[in-house]
Length: 95
Image (cartoon, rainbow, N blue to C red):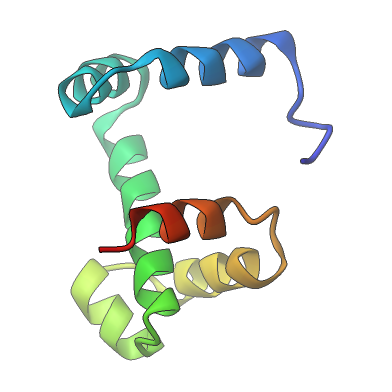
């Protein structure tokens, strides 16, 4: 974990997210907390991570998600060298 992120406010945000009980509550909370653009950007990056993990090429991912190659590269870098946050989520949500 990057210590620069650590703060009581971020701790409270994560506690709030962990308190949500279902998808409907997530929609309600994130609609209030994030702009539509922010939420779409976060969900796009997670979709890119899922597709990279599945072995899809940059061009296929760019075409299906609308993500730029810069975004795809950034997600790839965090998949390989990040804090393993993507990995945790991808492993827990595999269908």
